Length: 247
Image (cartoon, rainbow, N blue to C red):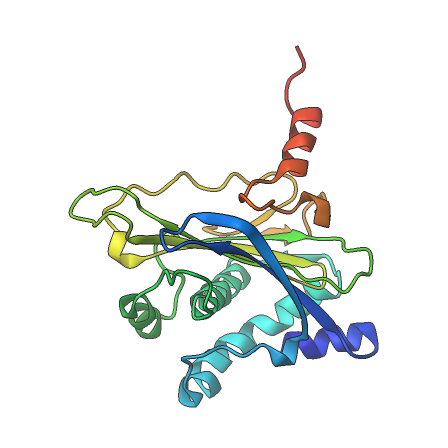
């Protein structure tokens, strides 16, 4: 709701948001057609399963701590992020990812164990990843929203095949583009994929070990966003053209 108010203030009026979400089958694989779009306002986004006591107390405190940092980013201010700022943003991003999984998107990733763990600890969980990028929508009223659940698909260390493994969550609001990866705690014995490589489009917020700045040196455009198979074709073309050593 506070993001919606900030966007309306920036726009000088009503803000409609297009939510785009890749759809998945029961095994967690992306299916086609993979995108649907529906136009609504931020204030109309309702999520199930959250009690008023949590929403108005500790969850609200996490929101209030993160909002000044994010508002500066939404206003396109160059922002220095201390390690404490990065912790605040990572905690907020972890909460948003858990809450987003409550939306019916084909396959729920997290169990009661994951929600209980965050309720008890209220810190970014082990192996949590968060990146921030700057997206240029050229004034269009379009904000990207994607949930992509991944399942293990293997039986390792007692983990059942097709158990939920992790959720990739992507969302943009104003010029801020956030991507997270949150692992299901039940799959703690399963080998984690390598850390997402951060290029010039990203500010890696978590895991972190030093202060950093936002925005990154390059801007993402809507054409560079993931396609219906989760790949970044335009981004890859740019990498091939500009970064790959020429023969």
